[in-house]
Amino acid sequence: MSITRVLSTALLAVGLAAAPAVADDASPSPSASAAGGAPTQAGTSFRTAAEIDQGQQATASGSTGDYLYWSFPADAGQRPDVKATVKLPDSHAGQTWQLDVYDGLRRRQACQYGAQTRTAAQGATSVELACVMRTVRAWSEPWADDPLPGTYYIRLTVVDLTSADLGQPVSAEVKVDSKDIGGSAAVDGSLAEPLVPGIAVKSASDDSSSSSDSSSSDDGSSSTKSAVLSSIEPDGGWSSGWWSDRWVWTGIGGVLAALAGIGGYALTRGSGRPSRVPPGA
Image (cartoon, rainbow, N blue to C red; front, top):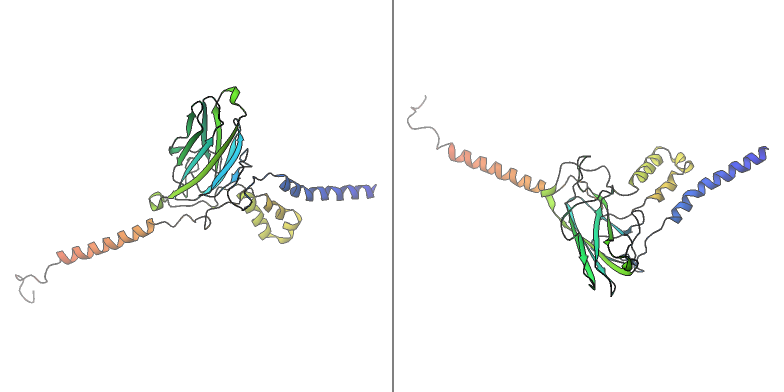
């Protein structure tokens, strides 16, 4: 009886140890080009969104009715500009396509301007959509809906079409550029971590491994590091959020104010002792 209990306990431990590896291997990953460039396939959900860098042009093939997902990083001070082109089949009825952008908390972000929803007329060969987001802020109030540094998701889908056109093959091209707004959009504050999928799991793994090396090898925290879902980040890494060119203009303004004060004093102090005051007074 005791031997059976020992064997069952050992098998259970082996199964628990192998579970994270199996889960990690089973997670789908969008395909990219052989040269390691932009993806040539889109994801079908937030978790499987194809990762792209800013400036890359990603392509994907699908069918009308599919949800196509991509993800990209955006840092503080940037104003992302998302553009998508859908190439339609030769014959089709009128259909409406929509481009949505979500932040790291999966909140739908509003577009400052751009044709986020467009209708392709019957027989049109393509439809182009665009969304210029608001400037990403380094910090915001918890209740606000401001865009924050982290991963952003693009969702492209058709929202209105006839049943006869459902399932027809289409191809899509997506590209993200951004403009650096600079100190005019800077705020005093920064996030502890960017809103990137898996950042909480990674932080917990780092804390547990730094507190006890032995426990990290026993409780499997080293395996949870591989559960991080997103590996994309801006060129040069995430900014700290405290530095911007606003500090430069503030310093220049302080120097100009000091020079103005010195000049004003030099003009108003006069030539010295007034002539009407007798000596020794």
